[in-house]
Length: 390
Image (cartoon, rainbow, N blue to C red):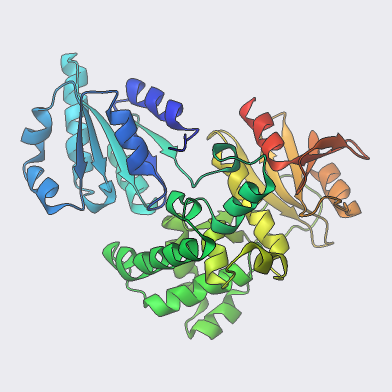
């Protein structure tokens, strides 16, 4: 078993909050982690994709009210959004009566509808925890082969643990098809699966680049607004990350369009037909694949209070990732694959523009050492250790 770093965080949240939502992509390990938590509590597990479990909730008030002092785990909660009002009523009734109440752990594979429903119905009663794929701190990484395996195959446990790269890519292909052919329609989106896959593949080729919505629309035979709608679907299903541009008070013309990254590096490589690590090294997407992999690993461990951005001025100066740690702490992070990274002067100029308090260059090596202008070259695991120590 691979230990997930959020396990203790989730267990503590379940003990303190009447309702906890664990959100993450399908097959990322939410159910496995929830079952581990369940073993520590008097619990009930219900899968809302199971007709039998749905039948138990035909009269949800009666069923849930009869489970006092138990942890009730509701998997794929977005399948039954009407339950949120019922949960609110039970939580409030128990608060008024001062009873030892049931607690709820809600597992969801999408954000938009789930967050909208819960924010309206469970405001002040629910805590959100996001679960991403495996990150570099959760797998062996001292051996470069293990490090490269996670980067190539991505963070879905079944993909990472596959017996071969070929088996991993086959599993990822089935996951992609499941999302396009089953999950998207079940969420109520009327989008041709072939068209959405084409956009997803285009995003893989344009990983971390500025998007031309009109050009994308022409290739898909739709308009720009429809492209935006399709992008929202992929973002809401936690498959694509939208990284916002820096908006601070800088006396320069800034790029205001978000950047998009295919969140899982394994899915990125499957969409691009990259079958093994040697093929990745010779592919033009190498640098942007590494950039997305680093960003996803870093963001996966950030507390909710930390905000992430990128910076690019019209002059070309840019920062790959900005972390607003607090009102007084701002980190500028440059991401470079390779063991002898060359730092552009524009990175230092941009760091001055935003008044960065610390500057890092994440590279493909394993050490940490200072270079010019107060910048530290550092490995991905070492930077993540620093973030966890905040």
